Length: 123
Ligand code: HEC
Image (cartoon, rainbow, N blue to C red; front, side, top):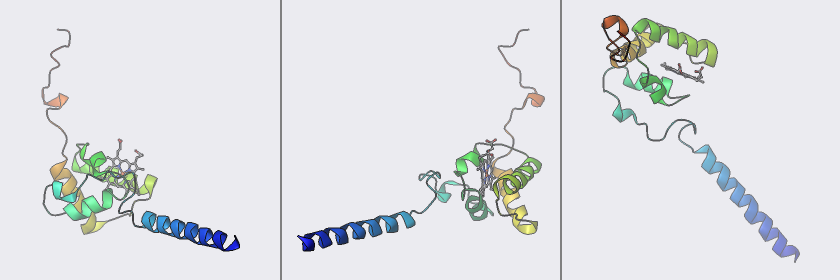
């Protein structure tokens, strides 16, 4: 009787240890979509740096859904640092990331200023 109890307890603690190993090996934070792969992004300088930096906290899609000028991307980086504690990269490291963001995620055309006319707007 006492023996059976000890075997059961050993099995349970073994299972708990296995579960914690599995949790420690999760490759990314749970909130980063698993279907996002760096290979799907345009392969120009800065891809590794940008994907690595930005997808540490959220899906890269949150970034690629936006279209901004280089200046506004710069503001966004500052915002991520101040509000969310992102690494405060400066100098050449920052330029590489900003170049990549501005090149592949520019403001969307046509903009209102560029002559877009709402066909449903009253004359
Ligand atoms: C330290 C964590 C962290 C890192 C690193 C990070 N972000 Fe964020 N980011 C967040 C959080 C948290 C949110 C969502 C909450 C919010 O909008 O304030 C967010 C939201 C955003 C949004 C959406 C804003 C909106 O209007 O909905 C954009 C765009 C963005 N991040 C861009 C970036 C870019 C570009 C990088 C890489 C250069 C980056 N983030 C890296 C934490 C981070």
